[in-house]
Image (cartoon, rainbow, N blue to C red):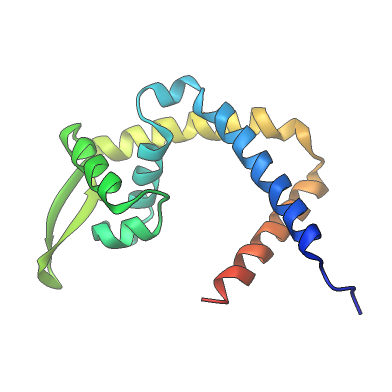
Amino acid sequence: MPSPVSVRDTTQAWEALFSAQVTIMRRLQRHPAFKRLTMREYDVLVTLGKCPNGGIRLGTLNENVLLSQPSLSRMVDRLEAKGYISRCGDPQDQRAVLLSLTDEGRRIQREIGREHVRHIHELIGPGLEVEEFAELTRLTRKLSESVQSRN
């Protein structure tokens, strides 16, 4: 039977995970691709691009990005003004509005996405062996599932 995990163990692991994430994100944000859009704006476009029916309500979008509701609302306004997002009525609820990517929004998201993926690979690819990346993926998914199961 495995020994119980201590508060110190979990805290050290969290600090290491958080530190790695912050270090990597800071480097990623400096990539020239994010001169056109911020990483947060890109995240919103990626999230909208994953919608199976093509549209999502603002509240649902807010559950999938790391922004406060007022910040997200202002960002959506900016992205709509740039022509990357459109709003339309929800056929299921006439009071609601659905957000979706425009063709231009989809184009810029894919263009930045290709650069972003290459940059991620260049940045972290040399850091671990193939087996270590597989283990990291397994462990982080397991951790996410554990936290999500307690909701």
